[in-house]
Image (cartoon, rainbow, N blue to C red; front, side, top):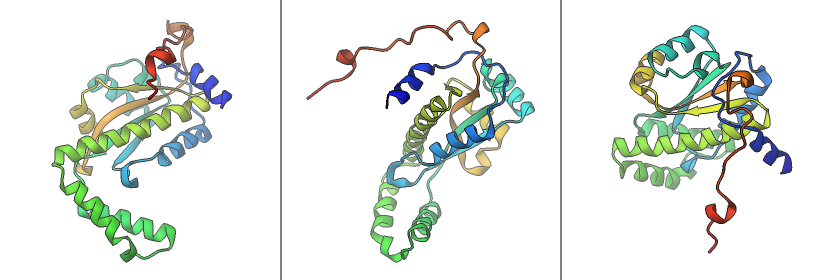
Amino acid sequence: MNNLIEDLNWRYAAKRMNGQAVPQEKLNTILEAIKLSPSSAGLQPYNIVVISDQETKNRIFKEAAPQPQIPDASHLLVFAAWDKITAAQISEYMNLIATTRGISVESLSKFQENVTNSVQARSDEGNFNWAARQAYIALGHALVAAATEHVDATPMEGFNNAKLDEILGLTEKGLKSVVIMTLGYRDAENDGLSKAKKVRRSHEELFISI
């Protein structure tokens, strides 16, 4: 646990990156952590676009997210939530459970009914917002995993979602971008925050014991 806390103290949202590539084995660990992150009902109603192509990164920087980490990152991870949640997607998930656990789909009928009822009780916008919150849980896992690998990771909002969706062809895939995470290595010489002390509220201010 002490190593984890040390790693989390090491990490910060790097403002400048040096263009160095993240080794594939480290990237694989981060992606596996994302895959293993929890989500409501286990549905994982999102996809992650993994971008290493420099031309694509440059276009995103120019047209959708003009932040300096974008072109200098090794990889961009775009967390994109499902625009709508369909009966077919729920059925596919039930089939995956049945196959993975060696049980019948029929034995999952009550669970499938509960998931379906929950989805149908919300509007499409409500389901998208719910899916986006699940994607943020995966983002949290990715940030922690990157820290344990000593890979710098910067989460980003404030970009042109519609333009990013257009660049990546997300709309036709039934997806909407929610948040970006850059992966790479800090450019300490050009990032004034690289050696700054981490600022966090005290335990007494942050936590409420009941």
